[in-house]
Amino acid sequence: MNSFTEENYLKAIYKLSLSSGGVVNTNQIALQVNTKAATVTDMLKKLSDKNYILYQKYQGVTLTEAGKKIAIHIVRKHRLWEVFLVEKLNFKWDEVHDIAEQLEHIRSDELIDELDKFLEFPAFDPHGDPIPDKHGKITELTSVPLASVKHKGKLVFSGVEDHSKAFLQYLSKTGITLGDTITLNEIIDYDKSVEISIKNKKMFLSHEAAKNILVEKI
Image (cartoon, rainbow, N blue to C red; front, side, top):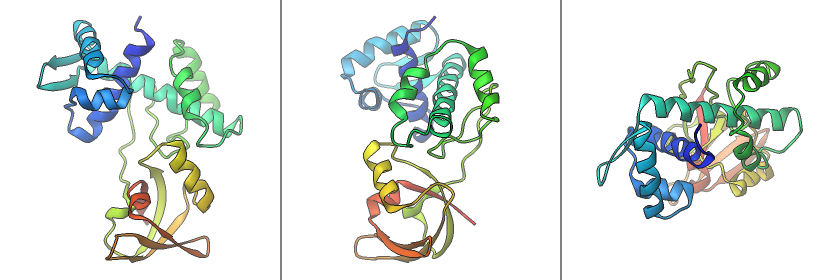
């Protein structure tokens, strides 16, 4: 049985690996788990001894198949609990992350499979992130940051890059919700902010906000 800390490290390495081509360095992990690099090194040695990661000092970290399987299972539990908290207990989408961080360590696979069934097998969590199925299969995302879209037109708001409470609360105040149709009207050359139309009203978004809003073309 693995400790909660070990599971958190495996999940962190998995998430970082998605944007780094598979190899993750210790400084990235330290930032992700909010600890010192020396502490990370000690944990990496433990995970390597359990054959969950391949680790060589100064060369980065990659997950083994066993490590990846555990990480994806933790991600699955986390995202299913987020769906449950939002859809069944009426939590707001900016309130569920910390609670799901605790619930994701529940050991019972039977409970998680029943939870999945109870929720009618959701494919995405409240933030637009794909939920792995019980076999570890995960939907490929085709979303891109709004800031990277070069042409005007209609888009669908499909997820967020920044999961922080501050950003989610900011989006809630703007009235933008997942699944909304966004019309990109203009990209401002000066600061790369954008003008969009949504729900029959126009608004401007900063480049920073547009980087963290994920969209799909219609």
